[in-house]
Amino acid sequence: MEAPRQPVDFMCSVKYLGSQNAMYPQTGTLENIARVYQKGCALNEMDVAKLTVTKDSVSLRSKNNEKIFRLRKILFCASYKKIPKVVAFNYMVSSSPKRLECHVFLCGSNEEARGIVAALTTAFRMAYNESKNAGEIHVDETITNHKTEKA
Image (cartoon, rainbow, N blue to C red):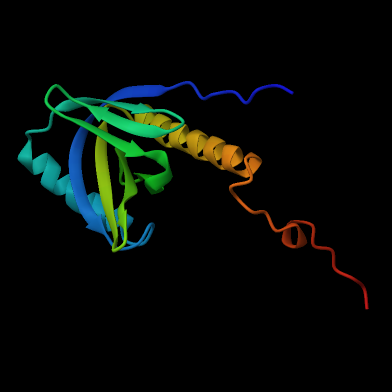
């Protein structure tokens, strides 16, 4: 059996615009992105940082700071159509009490923004498949193989 392929690490330069508390994994994300974008661009003190996506994490390294976000705690990722160079994800800071933060990044190009989302999608898929193969995720066969009987 062939070993599962590891995704190639994706790296690009971004400007970290900041974060804001998020209420739910998806709801309100676009509004949060817009708020953080406006605040972050107004500050104009953004350090250029190296963003790296691996199968386990997203890391953000600048000359003065390093943030590491564990992939399993990233609940939602999106680019913002109105500002296509912006990418954001919601991150679970704590589960009890539940606290989410929306982190926002400004990329150098639309292609880099799409590349980040694609790399995260690939990493999510690989993590899901690894967990499923390891028996950490229960798949209900009655749902996936459901056949309707004729009366």
